[in-house]
Length: 480
Image (cartoon, rainbow, N blue to C red; front, side, top):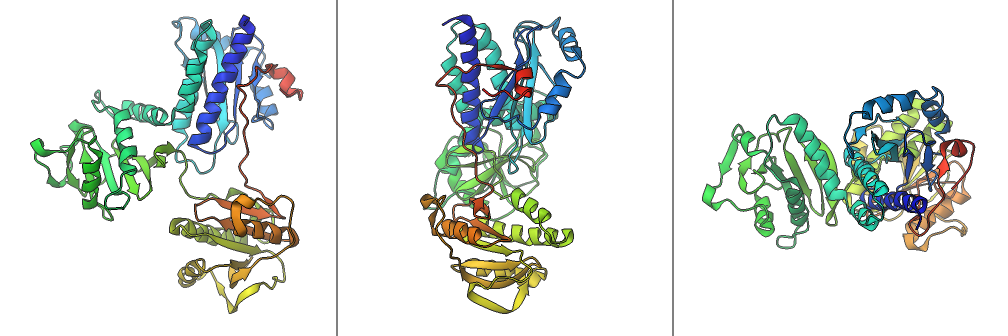
């Protein structure tokens, strides 16, 4: 393999590792890279999933509008820096994207981009992922015949370390002295506790880890004698202790090695808190969510449907802004209630001037969801088989409604009757939005027979070595 082919393979290999890793951590995700390996190299782009399409004007302004000013600035910055030292570059602030990049004496400039999903707890672990990709690219690109498959493997399985790297960054800013807690083992223990049942029940309650030098000011309800304090790595014992704090404002307190005791004090800002909620949970720093955890690994999702596409549809409809805002608020409440209750439901949002008549239980008079006393009633009606019929004035006209329609060719038999009935009904009726909440939490927003919030599918790029494009070619419309 010649030098040029090897370097192209390095880029494709690392990008594929980031893409696959982030797709498991978040959801199907696209990744792109803009770079210039040497100071005088043309700016190149690797964007196999067209992530940066739509941002051409901004990219042109950044890299070409002011001549070579950006190159001169980087040359001055890296002039006195040692090899392999990367100086972080400013975020390019492309809408809807997370980016991280840097400059170095042995790899002049690189900027990585990925999607900012609306349901992310925090963007910072993803930024640390891109930072790791940047470091690995510098190493692999400049090391002839480096074992680049190891970089691919690291990036595919980086979620725990990405979370740990973010916590390290936060502690570096918050703690005035060096901390002595080892973070990755703690995160592993949290995942193991979340997978351990006690008498058939999943873990519930809060366990937080604080620097030992910051535990003393806490007000404890009780402490465990020093010689009897259980090790956090003793997962089964810790799972039993969580029974003492579940469904309360009490928390278990750990110094990173053992359980110190139980407190009802607020979680300190610098503490790592694991909030166990059954078969899932959230990792926090103080009160700020970092990530969720379930199925034995960390994820970026807040587990709350953001319904961005629904909000856009309502704003684009003919109903007044105030009415669309109220309607979106009540629909969001119903969707989140169904999600937390772990039961599916279907909401038919009827934007017609004269509402449709649906087969089901018709309410006389319709129930207004703008009256708080009616919300609990409708949340209970969600559990009944069939759809809820909701009009643009936020009134419920019926429940237990049956949806019918002719077969459409794009049905997905893997999604079940609720989803496919919604596709058929939406395709057959205009000015109808159907929101389908599955029992396992995915939310589908269907309009004119199309699921408008369907996940994009990404395709691996490691099985071939693509030709890189110059940024000018890309801006002129060329594709990989």
